[in-house]
Image (cartoon, rainbow, N blue to C red; front, side, top):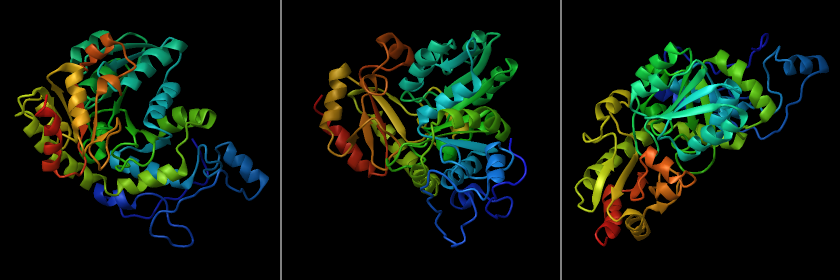
Length: 404
C-alpha cells in the first residue's frame, strides 16, 4: 500500500447520495477547470526527478506513472464505480472476463478450490473449469439456488465462492447473504457478478459479498460502445492482491474506454429503471403467448426466486428476459430470424434491444451436458430489453411467434 503523497480526491461534501456521486465522484478538475471529466490519452507520465520516480515506482508515493496500471481517467472511473457499489476500492480491467481472470490470478494458486454456480455465463464456466484447471486450481460447479449444495461442496482448500445474480441467461437469483455466511464459515471470499443489475438496482456488499465483478461493456456503458470490466472491494485487498497482478500482467482498461463508461455511469440509474419497467411489461406479455413454454424473469411472480430478487434488486427485475419457445432450436431460430427491430447480437445492456440464442452463442462452447446443467435449452431465447417502445417489441417478436 502506498504511503506519503496521495492522489487527491474531488472535493465533495460527505453524505452525498448515489445519484449525485454518479455524476460527481472522481478526481479534481485540472488547472483548466473542465466540467466534463478529462480524457488522458497518454502511455506514460513525466516525473520531476529520478528520486521521485524511484519512490513512485516503489509505491512509496502515490502518483500516475504508466497507464498500464495508473491513469487519471481510469482512476476517475474506478472511484465513481466504487462509490456506487459502496466499496472502498475498485480496479478497472480491459473486459468483464479479464476482471474474473484478475480475480483468480490475485487470489488463487495451485491446489486451491473454487465453488462456482453452474448457471453462470458460458465463458466464466470455461475460465474456471478449463483455464484455471490447467494451473492446478480445482472448481466445483453447484446449483445457483441451493445454499446447502454450496455448503456441502466446501473443502478445506476452498478459497473462493463465485456467483452471478441474476444469472445469464436463466435469471436465477442467489441468496447473497446466505452464500456470504457459507463463505465466512469456510474462511473463503464471496465474489458476485453484478452485471445484470448494476449498482443502480443491487449492491452485493450490502448483503455480505466481499467482491463485486462487473462487465462494464454492458449496463455501465449502456450503449454498446466499448469493452470494459472492473473488480470492486476492500481497498487493502485490491492494493495487495490485484494491483500487483495488474502491474505484471496488464489486463488494463484503456483510458478512452474508461472515459466512455465513466460518462455512461451518469445515466445508469435512469436507464436501468426505464429498461426494467419495459422488461416487466414484455415478460408479462410473453407469459400469455401460447407458443412459449416458459418465461424467465425475476420481476414475474412466477419466477422461483421472485421475492428474493425483489428484496435484493430494489423491487425491480432488471432488463433481461429469457423464454423457451416450442419447436426447440428450429423454433428459436425462426423467432429470432423473423425480428426486424431487435438486434441479433449476443451483447446486452444496450439502449437497443438485443436478441440471441444462448445455446449456440454465449454458451456455445459448452458441452450439451454442461448446457443442460446450466438450464440452457435449445429452445431458449434471451432478450435484453433496451429503450425501444414495448409495443414495437411485442409486434417484432409476434412476427416469429405467430408463424411457428
